[in-house]
Image (cartoon, rainbow, N blue to C red; front, side):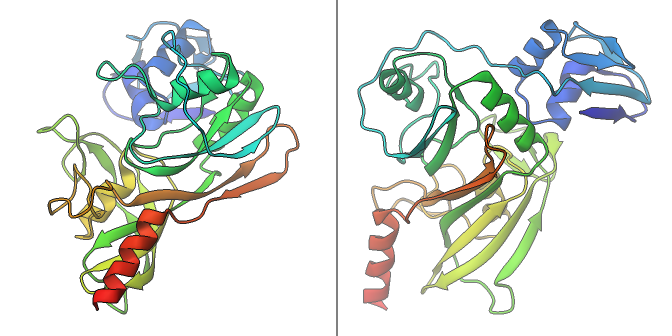
Length: 299
């Protein structure tokens, strides 16, 4: 992947790559350490290197970078396995489970459960799902598969769709539309992402299709072209249709114990070994179905 740096003032290479790619700061640091980043065909290893106008930045796609993991403690937890072969493991993650350990919760995460199931640390979780978002998540079992999936995510060829229950009804002439609103980190709250005036703003595109409407809520399908942090939650709040029960971007107190009615039900990509397109789907969670039944009964 080559990128032309066209801004008018110098910028550190690590900050630039965070802004224009989906790699984490840890990944970028490792890429630099592993001689995977070139500027004008010269290898760059320092994070503080200053890019100049019209510099050509290249990331070597034939290799990949792997985020280091802390020592994981195995967590005996039943996993809903959607698919498994020698390269991939596709899991239907429940709502309420963290994907990776944090300083606040080092155990009982999906990564800990994978350590118990696979009996190894040698696996790579390729994308994110928020703690309270349920649904499909892909795990790579080897570096070749990881490289293949990382490239597809960067090239925006991975297709992902979500079910969401949101507040407020939609206009009958506005039932299938695109949201193209860049997202960045809030200046006021480090936990929040936001549209408009924000730092490290990146392109964010979501496509919304209204499936069904109720008295003051709706069931929608959201497909994402980009994969920004909290993208669907921020975009739906931006258009005044926040996710039902969203603890961070919601507009009302919880009326059910289930948090954040957002479920990743579909993903497709090219398999790293067969080079064929693979598709995975899950059913709508029972919590969604039961809530919708309750609303229909009360209409």
